[in-house]
Image (cartoon, rainbow, N blue to C red; front, side, top):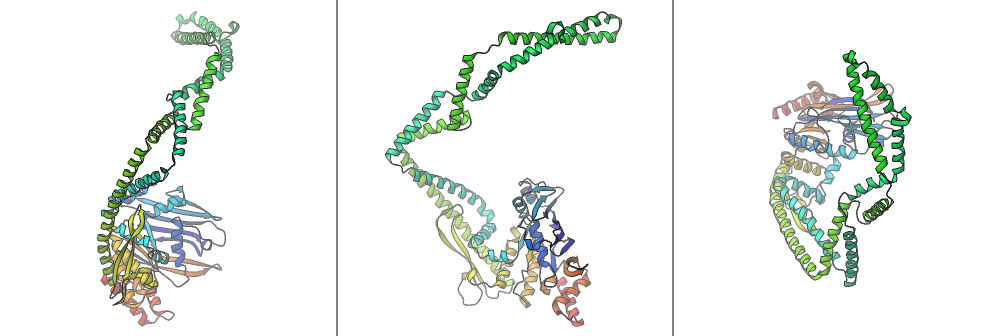
Length: 557
């Protein structure tokens, strides 16, 4: 659930901290008080684009921070799969905006806006007028059905997606197979030349690394010899080298070592050093005596490296890759040499894969059609609860023109809201207010399968009033039994159902207009309901009605 929202220097908000509760959180206030700023700031923290109009005119740094408490193991697992660590069941999303530049962070670590949106999608869902309109999309409607039926559909859709990719690959191969005889002969000739070139190179994995080491040694031979000669002189030079000096020091210590145990220990250490230096002198001398520059070997190494690098540039950047490329080309040669057999096999494979794709598409479609009946029955019942008196709701299925990774179903919701009217596509029937209620009905039905714990409704009550508003409030209360709901509303019937009621106000402070938000106590909530009921003049009767409305809402919980 969303535990808190912190907003600073955003539009009319200087700084505000809101601690949300479980259940139904209601936000109310006068028109223009800043309710849209609250939703806008939350959207901003969720990774949405920063609109210029929501930023403060003073050019100050703006900050939005959301703190989520996450307990669902599946949600935690999904978040951590996005490389985000959930610390003590807490996820903190923040967005800092300075001079038009926005920096997104999750639990203090900077992330991209796209990663912020991915994580946010697992934690919170915002439903506003735009989201209602998306319900008119046939693709969105099919997504809703698939989400509803995911327990039965998931495995089949995975199989279908894999099968479709394999079918498309075979289809592309079939299209490319239609080359003429002359073009195939040219391809065969080129492939034979390339395979011969790779085979004659007699490449060995790891050979390039060995050659590069040897080439480096040859290329730096003089430098190596000069360095070793200088080292040899430092050790042995004219009797004053390090070896001679160590030998002299050893003789001095040896003359007195028997008189003191500590001196004796020093002699032993210096003896070890003298032996090591003697071994080192021998190694250097042997290297300088035996290591001679072999021009022929240097030339052959350079030539071999040039050949390997040429093949890398031509085929791929590793010897293993070149050898694999040779195998693939050899296999292609076999195909071209017996092309008719290849075409016959490819055609058979394509036909078999198409038959498999048709079967899987049919199985997915059958599951969808069966589950759509259950979904539509549930949505119809939910719509009846929202004052659609004689509603019919169904889903119409057509077949797509071609196969897709999502199957062959071109489906859309159909609705009839008046007696005697035939079912029509949702977008051709529903008004704005009806669409809001349909969206709520769909969300209520989907709630049992919805792992997202926090739902935000921005004016879900648009275009409704009276008895319908009361029924919407009851449905919102029902949805809040299993989810945290944050709802902006202008209807007292919905506000009365609040588990936590917040008031957004606009005031003048220090010659500036600012918006504030605060949690209302019970009596303050009654007063706000009275304002929503009575408008400008709030009489005792209006206040009494507000109190009764609040008491009745408590009784229905």
